[in-house]
Image 1 (cartoon, one colour):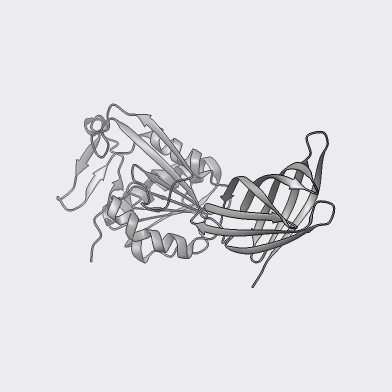
Image 2 (cartoon, helix red, strand yellow):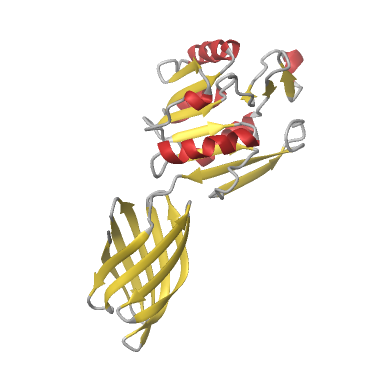
Length: 285
């Protein structure tokens, strides 16, 4: 079954360059994506040399081509329209990046995203929601997803940029929104850590919905106040305050979640002295 989605199309002919949208045979709408949007999508995605990028609904391929030219990323664009795929391949050849940028005629729901570092897309809202389980299941922690105009429903974005575009006549008129998500690690569960100088056994009980954490923490027998918690990919940060041994402390735990371990450091202060110590925590079965 053909999926109806937005594709990115750049019309090189001067007679078409002024309009902000065009239609093919009436089945699939093509939307011209201004260079300013492409630039900001790649700014949020931050592809690196050698990383893999997939553009779902790649149209003329400009995101994949720009990622290859500017960052050295290896990109794949998929689109259901053979004409657009041919156009994208020709554009990649002209740009001299055909060894990095490839394009295929494919249904986006049949595209394997395992091992992909960056996913970009400009799809209808309902298609985004249908893709959500696939994105979560196949992408590893730290992978970035960037979407033009439409979000991922229950998954709150990590960052959002908005810019005014007078020529934009499809979707939100006169403006574009660009959303970023960073696939989070699984930080759920009960974590234990030993800090003999500061209360002995620490425990962190973490509940998680996507990247949003709810944390309860104790240092020995003392409950700590969790003032902030952040999970971005594999990186976790917890800001805590409370009394340990009758003395008040502020502590910032920073680390990397890998399977059932967190390794990083803690910066702890009593208001007069600040120390930075290594921090390790293990998840309990």
